[in-house]
Image (cartoon, rainbow, N blue to C red; front, side, top):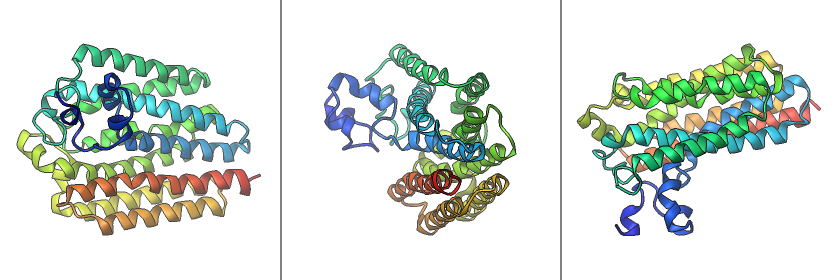
Length: 310
């Protein structure tokens, strides 16, 4: 198979394709390191909660190392989750234009090799998790059940994005677990707001595959909402802002955190206005812009923790 044919259809021209050793490329593609946007979206709720919990604790001394550990853990566990997803979805991926070039359906990696790679990534995540307190370790392990069942949800429910939200938002709880050794109401509200955010942005992402999904019988909120997607996004993105705002209000944050939330809300509004669900390339660009939205909120939270509070 030529190297061009081996590339994943929606991730051509990245560093994996051009600089990584040839033998490593199928594994890096399994881990989605050619498309790190998902790792960022998994990481950002971790960073939000770490910054907010540190501000509440009035102690930012450990914040840099916590942020660094979350960075490594998010990339490792997102890679493990995507590898698991590709193992379970290998037959479906072979039927979808955008995903048939993934390493397993394309024949670049066998299922046994993928499983071994999954274990290696999970072990990296475990090493990161063991740096935290016992409560945080238990909380982190508890998320694995949601990760395990997520790939099967698209076969049985129109709302697989809710399950993805439960998994991808878990970091909103982990920051509180790590910093405070408990999860209070602000953490739960932040988690709920993040879930609403994930449902919104993954609906946008799912519109890329809507036609293929309908043909092979895969369910999604993109198919469920259809032409009403913009209205649904208004609902879910509004919920995200309201719930996150409630978490901030309960935490007694300063002006910088509110500026961050306002910038986050404006960005979400821009996404809704910009989106055309009939343009898959635009859907992907709008989806990817959620990293910037999440970083705007994080910037406000971390500045509030570092400057306003201290």
